[in-house]
Length: 536
Image (cartoon, rainbow, N blue to C red; front, side):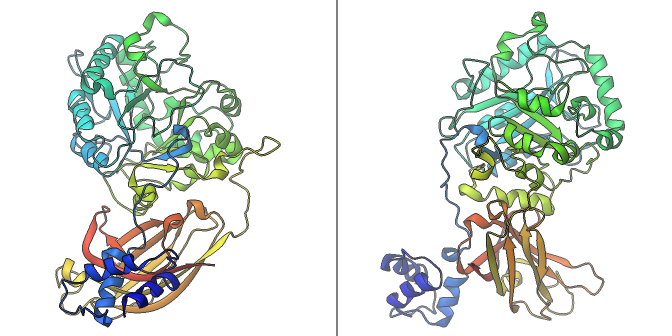
């Protein structure tokens, strides 16, 4: 295959209509170190090395979204209880998971602020549980040191604040001293729109409720413990038609009493209040009326169960609300094992901060990681236009509407390789080579979501499947390609052999290399599939 042949291949098969001779030459250069390379052109083995190589990935990270829109027009890579190393009940608090999350591109870090035992300093822990604390100053330092390693775009710190005014003042000094000019403090409490990610590059924003404190710490702690015991009951009883009571889940920083931020100024801590870039609010009265009455931009938090209930009757109101304001979704309290939930319902309703436990693994975390591989992995993904548009009669997108198919994705799974290099030779089967099969499908809105699987190829480290599948897509903008390699076991418990999740909107057409990741989302050195993708 000559340079000219390769240019033709790139254009006609790979769909790279602007491919040039220089692109083909770069591929030739990348293969020069191989003994199978021939100067006059690619022989079959060298061509296969290109197909399965790093220059032919199905997805190449690149920041390409418009980053000049208001901050509320983006999905943000959001963590939940970002300081926990394990479960929600008894694990250690540490700066390590904060550092790991930021280096993965997470842009929203959550810290629960509590007085220490002497009530003279601030520590971070999951209150009312057996989790060990970590000093707030250590968390802030870890954020400062790692905030912009993976991305230059802004980091938001959400405080779940259970402090006295004295300790809030201490936090204000600590935050100001740690971040200095990195801190973004708006000049007015009444923002009509948030600034853009581009304007806020390398800035840190604080999001919490204004510091009106009306309850003794003892009462707050007792309420916290009571709520933890009754999470499942509270989650079940949330009403979709009334404003969700944030006291019903220990994740929110609400007090028992009414939290009108304009009242009770005698408890204000001005230096703390001035730090707040994104004000968190608590809805009062009917949920629908609260969504409609928001004058200044703010953030509302709902548990996953509250979101499900609200979506039944207030879907379009949430979409309208999130066109200017932030909606944060967090795991329900009964997820003590730090598991996660399907993020798609939140994204469909415009929720920018779908908060996840980053310390675990599993299907939903893989979907979250796949979503934020979009836009160069910078932690900000522009919301689809249909969630931001307002029609001629002031109508907005209805998440319940059944839409026609926009496009169909055709997928072919050719072959896989790399397990023999990345796994022990007895990892899958002690006495014979593995029997691999592949699950492939779509994570998206309910109508688009489905999984298919290939046959299992017996006793083969480099399996060849050559199987094709079709996936009709009604909302391709929110669809993700899910791929999982498994080794068949007669017991019915298939062994894990790698996974990935890629945004459909950025998927390259043609015959492509698809590297697989381990359960935590870290890429294997050699394991990958050869697949092809076409849109019709």
